[in-house]
View (cartoon, one colour):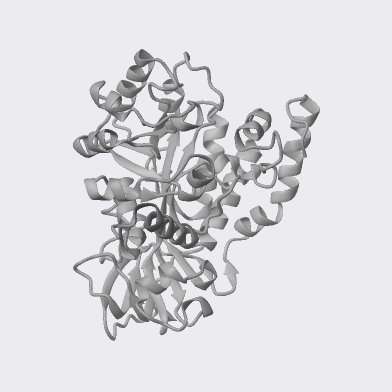
Length: 442
C-alpha cells in the first residue's frame, strides 16, 4: 500500500537544486499535492507536516537509467566460480521464473533503490515472456511508490531471427492506461539492434517502435561476444537511420571517436553502468561522451553482480576511475551528480517532471545528514558528498510527495517483506531450475 501524501514543509535544508534559477543554500521547501509548491525562507502553511532539516542536504532523488529489475534474485548465485558467471546463471534460471518471482525480484530491487535515494528507475526488461510478466513488473513499480520507465523487451535468449512481440506490447499499453500508471510510469522498448539480429529485422523493430512513438534503448556490448572488439559500430546504426534523439545506447565502452561523433550528430544518449562495465567489459568512455556533447547518465544495471543500488558509491568509483583513465578532470563531482539527477531526467524525457529541486516539478527529493561521519569534517557540500558521502547518511526519501524512507527505515511493509524474503525466493528458484536439469550449481 502506498503511503498517503500530505502537505509537507521542509525547513532549513541546504539545497543542492541542480537548477540554475534556484540558489544553492539554506531554504524551506513546501510540498503540496505531490509537487514542489514553493521554495523560500520562513515559509508557513497551516496544517502542514513540518520536517526540521537543519543540517541536512536536500537534493533531487537519484535517477537510474538502465536496470534489469527482473534478475535481482540472481544475486548470491552469480559469482566467480566456474559456471557461475552472470550469463550462465541467467540462462540456467531465467526459464524458471514464476509470476511472483518477477514481482518480488523487482520489488526487492526497488526497496534497495529507496534505501539508496533512487526515486526514478528505468526498468529495462529483457525477459518479457507474457502479459503476466508485464503486469508483475508494473505492479511492483507502482507499489514501490517510485517513478520510472518500463522498457518492454524480448524473452531472455530470444531467437535472433524472431521479431519482438509488438502485438503483446500494444495489448499491454491498452491495458495500462496513463491513469492506471498514476502518472509515474511510461512505456519504452528495449531492442536488440543489428548486431544481435539481422539488419532487416532490426529495421522492422525500429520502425515499429517509432510508429508507436516509443523511446528506444539498446545494449551496445559487442565486447561481450566478439573477441578483440574495439568498436561499438554505431556509425553503422547512423548509416541505417537507427540512431536518433529517441535512442538511448547502453554501455558503449568501446566507442571509437567515430562512434561518439555519430551519437553527437544524431542526438542519441548514453547510459553507463560503471561497476558492471569495469567488471566485465572495460572502462566507460565518460570523458569522451561529455566532451562531445553526448547526454550521459548513470545506471546500476543489475543487482546480480557486482553492483548494489549504492548510487553514491557508483559515482565515486566512476569519478576516480575516469580521472585515472584519462588524466583529465572533465568529469567533475557536480557533473557526476548531474548524471544521476537532471541529466538522467533528460535522458528519460522527464526533465520537466523531476531531476531538480524546482517549483512546479514533482516532489522527488532526498535528505542527507550533513553530520553523518562520512560527511565530516565538512567542506564543499558537492565534493564532500561525491568523495566521502555514504548512502547510510540518507535519512529521508520522498517520491511524488510520498515519504518512502524515514530516519527509522523503510516506510512500506512490502519493501521490508521483499528484503526479508529474498533468500527463500532465490532458493526456491534455484531448486526449480535444478529439478528441471538446467542448473546444477548452488
